[in-house]
Amino acid sequence: MPYADPVKRREDKARRMRERYQKDAKHRAEKKAKVLAHYHETKTDEVLETKRRRARAYRPEPASNVSVTVTRQIRGSSEEWRTWSEAQEASGLNWTEWLRRALNTYAARRTPKTKSSA
Image (tube, rainbow, N blue to C red; front, side, top):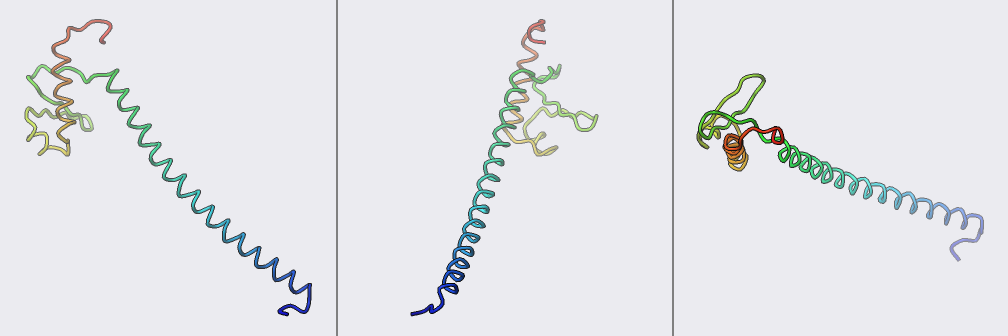
């Protein structure tokens, strides 16, 4: 018989249970933190993307008098690029962004200014 003393047996069992519970609790906490962190990351990305989409829908970029140009304002100074290669050289603007801005300026020039669009 491993335990002659019943008190010793109870204490040992209690210690084992306590250690196991603490280990499990630590594991659960780590897992929960990991899941929450991932959730918040994805959530913030989704929320930001939705906000950007809404902003684009309601506030098209201002029109420009130049043919199809993209104006980008950096700390007060504005630059204009007529072609995609110019835009790529001047900044890290990607193709879709450049095209979107170019089309926005083109569309804004074509539509007559009314109170509803302003």
